[in-house]
Image 1 (cartoon, one colour):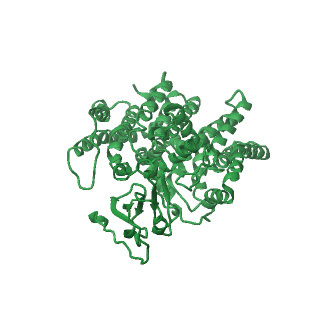
Image 2 (cartoon, one colour):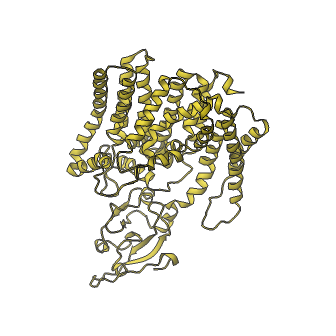
Image 3 (cartoon, rainbow, N blue to C red):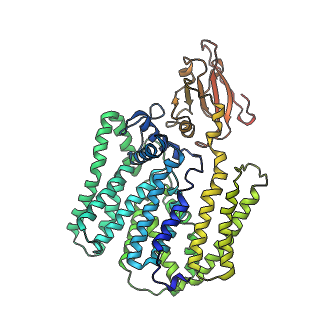
Amino acid sequence: MNMRDNPKLSGAATVVFVAMVILFLPWLGETLFNSKGEPREAIVAVSMLESGNWILPVNYGSDIPFKPPFLAWLIAVFSWIFNGGVVTEYLSRLPSALACMAMVFGGYRWASRIRGERFGLIFSVITLTCFEVFRAGMACRLDMVLTACMVLGLYSFYELCDGMVRHRGATWVWIWFLLSCAAMTKGPVGSLLPCFIAGTYFLLRGKPFWATFFKMISVAVAALLPLAAWTYAAYQQGGDAFLDLMYEENFGRLFGTMSYSSHENPFWYNFVTLIAGLLPWTLLIIFSLFNLRKRYRSPMKPAGLFALTAAALTVLFYCIPASKRSVYLLPAYPFICYGIANIMEWAGARKALKAYTWVMAVLAILAPVIFGVAQFVDIDKIVLEPISWWCWAVLLIPVILGAAWIANRHSPAGHSIAIVWSLYLAYISVIMPSVLNPRSDIHALDQIPHEAGVEIYSLGPQGTVKPRFFTLNYYLNDRIRPIESVLDGTDKPAGTVLLIDRDADTTGLWRYYDYKPLLQRSCDHRRPIGIAIKNNLNINLIDSIPLSVNYSTNEP
């Protein structure tokens, strides 16, 4: 079927929904936690369920959450409903996956109302399969929940401005709800940025300035009221220390006044991350550049103006703070994907689209074959988890789709989105677990005594901001507590476990603890970790004798 020649596609909504369900829901628990970001968010929900404190729970013995609790609430509720209150990797990632699916399907609905079901299908699948969007949708992080609420709110703003809604009052309430959830996920930016973008678009469409200004201010402030209520309740528990943390995370990060360096990058960093985050569709943009001279120039349609406004203002806004990360730009991706979908629909880019489909077809054949061969070949410093029999069937899907394009070479748009989708399916279900699971710190648990009654502490590098072993703490069910020095652990009972970062001060450790290396490379901080167990001796620490640890030979 040539999608370009069919303005309508019956069943397109079903195709989008099924594609999202298959891509996300069966595989969320296949990959273990293997970086500090995911367990750091999941442990907040763990502490909520264990303590019953849903306002400002404490984890790691003394840490309060850095961000508002909406994501943790979702994880905790899902865990309570579906797993008896036990937080798992699957349930920790489920809110992000559902948020991504809601955003993509909302984008399909928005685009199909403007341009038809065929365009909506192309637009939604491109959005789903942008690397940065996909990565955020399958991770236990704040960013996809924040982005989905913001982007869905922006779609509703557009429909209000262009008279596409029947019940304007209900739509304003829906926008308020979405932006309130966004603010409760990551702070005031979840409300302020969408209102700024929508207000700018309203003005570009000729709406009265003051009426637009007061509408946007009213919505933005109203959406911050739930956040204000939570902030007050949390302040009652956390006091000034909580307020200082919230100010630093929300305003200090924006204005570059944080007490520590956090993801500081130059101005051009955002544009480099966009190029990487839009993969594999970046290649289509590059190929189509050769056809720009043939582009027929016509006045920009309202949807195009809206997408351009949203993408440009989001990127420019996040160029302001010194702290820059690829995930900050997530709200811009759906609107950039609107432009990519236009390229795919543009007749002048047909040769570029065919060339792109050829590249993806070859990749779809080579990537699974290379991974399959790697399963049987020992590669220095690369450890792969063996895959099950059904994984080979999944790996065949992109190979078959790539070969199908090479065989018939019809409908490059349909083939390209199907091939890209199948590559992501192979990645999330087979390749990612096989590559990342061996890197998880969970494999060190059998070397850590964690029977009931055993006290577990961590000793991090001196001078760092809250050094924590997040992954180990999650898999130990939030049992690790921090200590500042070896001296703080001298009064602990025999059998006490001390987890030690490579750069920690271990002066005098040998007098009280028996030491051995634990991890050559922690998945949290990419540094070695050692384990020390308190012995039965009771020696007064008189001298400061440093312990020399040789991590390369696994010998103290």
